[in-house]
Length: 195
Image (cartoon, rainbow, N blue to C red):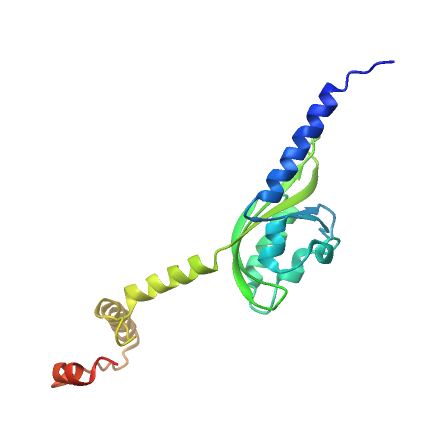
């Protein structure tokens, strides 16, 4: 008896290639089932290095173990809503590694449907964007603060003053603006330095 197994062999080869691709992905990938508990069924090596947890420690658990005291409850609610609605979502939230250190996690979470359009799983793709967030915060601060003194800059001061004038005008409260001119500031900087 002979049987043509070419198609099965091609399917197995494609599955092997897909698994190698997911395993080699530089972003953390986690696959959970679509049950009420959203149990983790698979994580790739990038997830392990990103979080510090080994696959054996997380399989069978819910991803909530990555959350901590500073994880934004609003973002958690958005995740729950996306899971209930079976919709894709992209958010940034603070997660925690096994050693307790935190990182900014850019998470893309999406449902996986079978051929009958039934949601069987959810896939999460995680990326550590902590340095990116720090750079953005630094640039935003540089735009509003003086780099030497750390005080707000002239442009930001004018914005704040404009808001204060509007509040003062509506509430009829007094508003005092003081201008301080430091004489001899230049020689002080030159002799002692900015710090």
